[in-house]
Length: 314
Image (cartoon, rainbow, N blue to C red):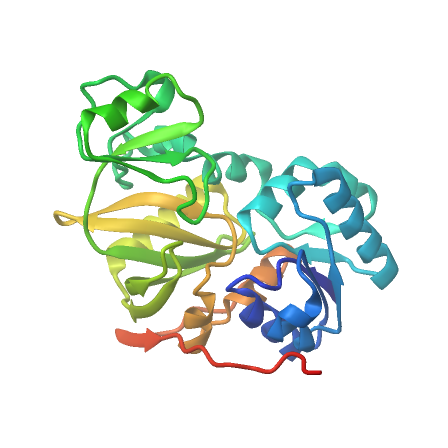
């Protein structure tokens, strides 16, 4: 299969590209920056520089042009912003016979809207969510400390910590924010995949060390039954197909759902490392095949290592 992988400078790109290549697929990469800025560009069959996804019309046109030139059948987008754009422009790609490996519009309406996600689960008997209101309905009696996040935000961008009354007052009447009661505790994320036959599999991990934008660098794999069962329940409720990542905070004996990332996580390589191929299972889910069967895995700590690599010299 000929596949276009976007945002090859993102954390998950190395893992995604090389799993696809190992299975014999032709991989074309693209990114907003030049190919000689990315080590993983050398693993692609070809790389194109494209406009920013915020330039929606130019970006979509560039992707379609690449797909036609390289006879590409499907696109693996790796960032939330790109997924938002592709979701809005599904018809353009369908008209060019290009398959988008993204969640359904109905699923994305929940996963990419934190307040819609909160509303769906606030009275749920299985899924816990933090007490939240949208900023338009915010009043001065909301508990402090709390946090405010853009409703369709990503990677902690735009996050505001509310520690005093003035912070709260400044948010009242604004739009596009969800305000949540502050919950402290360890962060757990779950790589989760589900196919059209209803088979699914989850690998939870506690993020011991993480970057400021939420990418785990040292993690503890944990086969926690509560998280596994909770993500399976969410997957069925939202009709998830393919691989996503869910984020939880553990507080006072409960796991609270705080995010659903409708894409590969920055740490999807951790799941590959312990022996489960989330990438090919994701692909299988969209071509009518079953995901790989479950594997047994034990609690373990894994660290991501970075190294220097020469990209260009004069």
